Amino acid sequence: MNHFLVGITGQMGTGKSIFSSFFKKKDIPIYYSDKKCKKLMNTVKYIKQNIKKYFGYKSYQDNKVNTNFLSEKIFKDQNSLKYLCSILYPWIFLDFKNWISLQKKTIYLIKESALLFESGTYKNCNLIINMISPIDQMIDRVKKRDNLNKRQILDRIKFQLSNKERKKYSNFNIENSKDFSFLEKKAEIIHNQIISFLWEKEIKKQEEEK
Image (cartoon, rainbow, N blue to C red):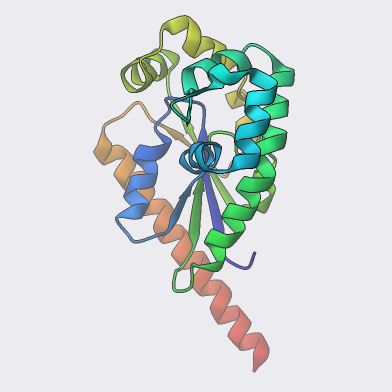
């Protein structure tokens, strides 16, 4: 993968998509891993068959993945989560590889993923942005977005890597407890730093080739 790849991650409800949207305005291509994952669960026959076999036919309703049912299963059992990941990750990897091959004229790429660290795909990133929010704000956002109760949300957060661990691998840790203008300024700073870094790298390369 020759493109400069930026990973945007964070626990659920920390504002990954909001932060990614500022880069989208600058025409930076973004791969939304979580959305792609759901799409693959609904379209790939192999994935659907194995999910039904392991979790039961309730895992799908009207030929669409039953997200709430499946989430209740995998966020209470580590083995179930590992099994689901073992089915999905090879397909996600291929889909992402194909997506990258289609990105020709771009400065850099972004991969947004809640499980960037858990999946091990953070190793392919040149730079990692980790979103952080106070727990009460995270719960409030997810309640509104996914219609879940507090217990369900805390169960799912528990299965995600802690912020203490995330910080070890991240280049930027963005506190999302401010307003949009604060986040937009942060995104602008990071964008400019990436451009500057890549520009300096290109100049150095050209000088070495002379």
